[in-house]
Length: 261
Image 1: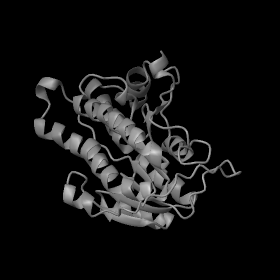
Image 2: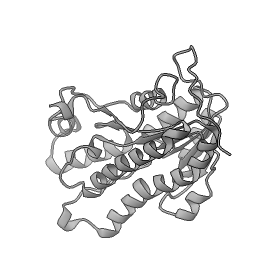
Image 3: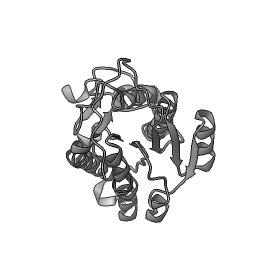
């Protein structure tokens, strides 16, 4: 039997997640680590999921949470993760840069498994608990590449576009149960994944890392800096707070004005 959706709004403006359970994929580094830290600070019991054992344990220990070492391309491993989740943050991702004509099919498939299929499986096994409690928050860490395309990133762009669509379906189906689902779609964030791209492009073009950031990555962005992971986590936390209960099925774009330019 399902519970009635909880529409009560606490007086305090910040998210109070005491008594809630959160699960964050890609929680060992970058945006995922920042989200796990923010959710735990708000009181959530936090499960940190990452393929890297040392990173998962380090973050879990730091926030007083639980570490899970999981390859998200393995459906059986995903099925073994906790299902009693109130806040699900799908943050794990990977990148491969190559022209379509040279893109390895196996790598393309892997990106879809980690960034689309795994979020689908986690939704499938987490939503029944959220529905039963009459409250739930799904935050999908998408990207400006879920709204726009860049050359040579076919797998990543395809996966982020798919994640945006999956998030909207979860929003429509979850609405009667008090469950919201949204994407946070940042531009270039100061993460290990982006730093790797910067170093690679600098080496190829024989320029500095700073030149790659200003002249390549941020060429179309009016705001000429990388986004910090903590800024993305703050947006994710706001989507779990008391004043965002009617925000669902949307994409919160954090791109420094890239898509407006």
